[in-house]
Length: 346
Image 1 (cartoon, rainbow, N blue to C red):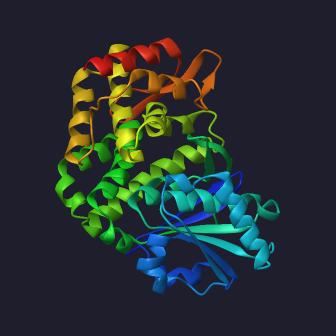
Image 2: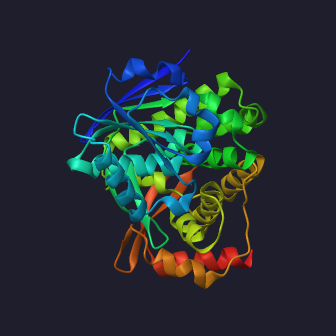
């Protein structure tokens, strides 16, 4: 049975439908005229499930598509099909499609209504939830964007059946992150039920995804514009975004490595017990995620100095007090660089 989470922020109200079939989507759109944004892979596999639409805009898959050039191209396509302020923009796809759809809809004609059908586990627990919509600039992640809530997010687990294991691991990386910063119970559930989770047991998935979405929406409701509590969701991401810019690894892999670095730094600052950091590394490994990697320190340090969370020679960095309890600390870049040096040595 599906779950419904109603979430309200400064920028609008969103209904999140967990374990709902895409065939039921029309029940939540009130007969609005739709333009769909998707990518080649999703269109090839699932176009027969799409709701009736005036037009379908098909993007090239991959993070390289998430640029202002793509956004400009979509604007022109919307003009060509006479989209107006009554048009509903629906993104059906993974995180890239969600980010682009939300950004385009929020800026075209000063804002159209929009929604998501996320088709990857990563998008279902991360990109489609919380209202952050943006694109990359010169390889820097999400450097240009807005905060604006979709009307509806429909999470249909049947899309996950065609995902490779590496893509599923990406999603579990973000689930583990949410557990690490806000729910010891969820963390322990993942430890106990990792095999069932990886088999995509539907009942367990509904429970895990539901709890992850509740964690994220609770933090966003306190701090929609990312000035305080929401920053906890950046656990592992400062290092991760630098890795993604420098190396061809997935977002989930990068966040996994970022969490290891942040956990190690938490231990070094006497905030987190070493045994807890070890549990985090072990859980990441259980879900097929990396906990070490050879990398060039200099390639990582420069992007970190361009991170959106910086302020002069300081940066907001998420550390852990314990599993399930995070703290946003203002650190000097030299402290983060030292943690990177330590990880290189290890």
